[in-house]
Every structure is written in structure tokens, then in C-alpha cells.
Amino acid sequence: MYRKFKLKNPFFYALIVFYFSIFGCSEKNPTEKVPGRTNSKIIRFVQLTDLHFGYDIHDKNTERAIDIINNLAYSIDFVVVTGDIFADNILDPAARKTASMLKKIKFPLHVLPGNHDINGVLNWAEVHNYFKNLFGKYNNYRDIGDWRFIFYNSEPLRTGDMDHAFDIEKLIDNKKNNIIFHHAPCVDDFYRGKIHSVWRHKNTSEMWKRSISKAGVKAVITGHLHRSELHYINHVPVHSAPSIAVYWGRQSAFRIYTIREGKIGFQTIYIQ
Ligand SMILES: [Fe+2]
Image 1 (cartoon, protein in one colour):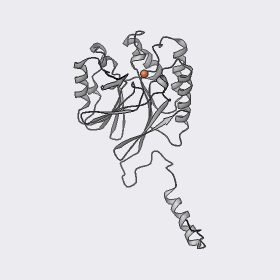
Image 2 (image 1 turned 180 degrees about the horizontal axis):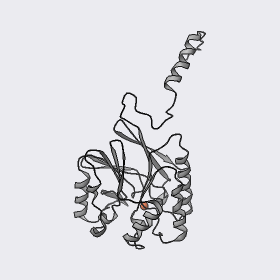
Image 3 (image 1 turned 120 degrees about the vertical axis):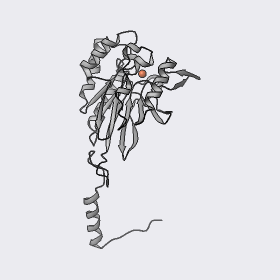
Image 4 (image 1 turned 90 degrees about the vertical axis):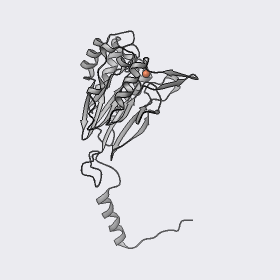
């Protein structure tokens, strides 16, 4: 049983006030330095994936996610959308109008295409122009301190379309800590009791695995699987994040990542 605690000494109250005035009770400033490490900034970013616009529930849940992101109690460095913005309906004007809601995100935004942003409806030149006009370029990077964040369209490589595949190694800086974002992870997918290869060509899979195993690559972050998974390609962790899309009875979710003292962590935010 807890004893009832009475305190009459005013010095104790002064001590409490002094403690909270110095250390605070919560983290208020996202750009603060890690205590004791002058060069170690806390980096935060958000990953949304597999929105599959064109269904009411997906459109509404993306809007809710954007609202949550824009009203977080702290600032974030950027938002990345790792593909499948559309559901094979990129040519539908209504779906395109919905996709423009992503521009409401008040933080720097990077948007990558997935297999459902091109399959059977456009060629790569059109997808490239469409994404560039609406969201800005991909196959580029953002440097923050000694971290490099690479935004890569892996779909040509995954499908063996070497004419449109960009060389990922041109984006990797082996003097930095690199995190590579792309759509479909180069891992085995397990569903309906069977293993399915996500990447279709053995030679491009091997090429990819060699490239991402280069010095300096700290993590690969993807979507496509519509569920939370962690794999490894050699020493490199490959994350797959849960989707906004609710196919197969899934709950819409997105992730907030934090890099602190060189370590990458994440939280999953579910849309109610
Ligand atoms: Fe998807």
C-alpha cells in the first residue's frame, strides 16, 4: 500500500520548478541537438505508401494522414511517398485531382512511382513528366548533415526495362550514411501459402543487391507489400511499411521515423 505523502518543505517545490525549467517535461524542438553531441541533429521523416487513390476510403484516409502530419507537435525534415499513388488509374482526371492533395503537406515532399502508377496505362516518359510536374523529380537525393536520403524509381530495374533504369550507384555517396527509398523490395513475398518473387529478373535482382550492399548504405525503405516487414539484404535492413490502402482488411497506417545518434527508429501511426 502506498503511504500518503505530505511535504511541507518549500525547498522541495523550488527544486521541482528548477528541474522542469531546465530539462522540460517533453521534447519541444525537433531540431534540437542530441544532448552532449554537438554534431548530432535529430532527423525526422514520414513515410506514406500505397495510397491507391480512386477509392473513397483511401482518399479520405490519406487526407486524415496529411492532417495528422501537418499538425504534429514537432517539425519533420521531409515526407516520402514510396509508390502506388494510383490504382492503375493515373489517366483518370478525378484520381489525378485527388492526388494533388499531397501538395497540402507542409513539409518537403518526395513522391516515387510504383507498379500501379504505370502498369498498362502509360509509358515511363509520361509517368516521369507527370510526376515531375505534379510532385517534382525522383531519382534524386536530399542531404541532411552526414545522412543522404535517396529517392529512387526501381520499377524499370525490377521489371528488366534497362532502357529506363537509372543507375542507383550514381546517387549513393559512400562517405555518408545513405537511406534508399523505393517501391517494391527485392525480397521474397509470402502470401496465400506461397513464396512469390517481387523482382522478376534474376540478373537485375543480383545487380540491385550488389549496389545496395555498397559501403555507406544503412537502410532501404519500401512499400508494395502493404504490411510491416523487415528483411535483410546482406548487412542492409530492408523495411516494408504498412499501406494507406485497406485491401485485404488492412488498417490504414503510416510511419514516422527518427534518426538519433546514428540509430534509425520508427513509430506506426494508424488512421482511425
Ligand atoms: Fe500497392
